[in-house]
Image (cartoon, rainbow, N blue to C red; front, side, top):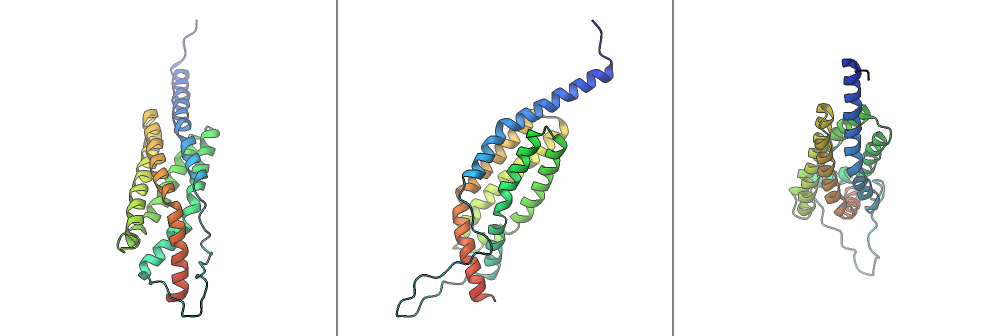
Length: 199
């Protein structure tokens, strides 16, 4: 029986770690994709909410939200489609056995989520959108923490960390999915208010 050279042994060890990392990712990723695909689709940012039927009397106008809340709600609604794309991109890297691609996707996902997260405090500052803002804040924190753990664990070759990261991301994604319909409705209201009050 021949002994492996140190280089061959190291290469085999890297392949084994890569397989373990991909397996860890694949185990949890399915739940993320399911959560994204079963959530109610959001309205297009260009959609306009129409007022109710007009009777013989004057039609009441909705109370105007603060301008910063309106802008933040529209931005968060517009970002909704990116969540499904993020899950698809992660799935593609797992299917292709592309660890470098997964590093890139997690890094890009962190940039996207941290940017969108900056809009959430504007929802939390206004009474009518505070509950939604609080829920989104918690969901975003979980998703960001999960992606960061996945990324760091890939760099260090920590397969259990990859699994834990996907579980954390999936939990945050599920919490986001639970209020996705409400976010869509309020984003439509915000678009309408922007057209009426903030032209």
